[in-house]
Length: 58
Length: 162
Image 1 (cartoon, rainbow over the protein chains, first blue to last red):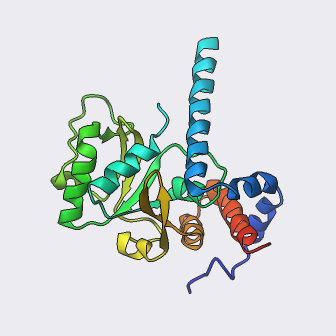
Image 2 (image 1 turned 90 degrees about the horizontal axis):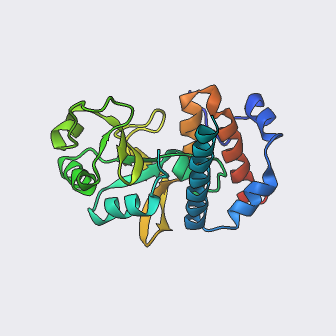
């Protein structure tokens, strides 16, 4: 039987929802899709820099 | 690794006329997710003409199998695409996954019906919609996706005023 994600309420997923930072999501939803992808690229650059710094500190 | 250059990758695909749908983490971000993803996942149409366009779009960007040992012979051409289905690649524009089929989502023809075009970096790209993104993540059934599903469902609720 096909299980539509619209109707099916998974208690595990509901439990995960309680821990979401909805203010962060709400802020992101104010951006355009392109702005969201640009923010992702910024996060990627930051992650790369963190990894580089961690390697250098070893 | 380097950050993925989404604008250049999407433009390369669009300018070559590739029929594709943005899926996976990048689609989730475009739809509102705040999660970090490293690559661009695209479902591509597996017609000979489209595979030719895909090769044209990416071949000048040094595509290579991600994680494969250096020196392993690999050429992204039409026969390679025909012989495989899903390819995880590194290019000089970043990481891109070419998916002939997505678990729980089917191929391009099915996915494009659940997509809408978004204006991204000067091109209009089909991006998988929230409902199908949730279905695909559910179908994958991986515990690591539970948080992602929760976030996507929350986004859907918030967009509906919840």
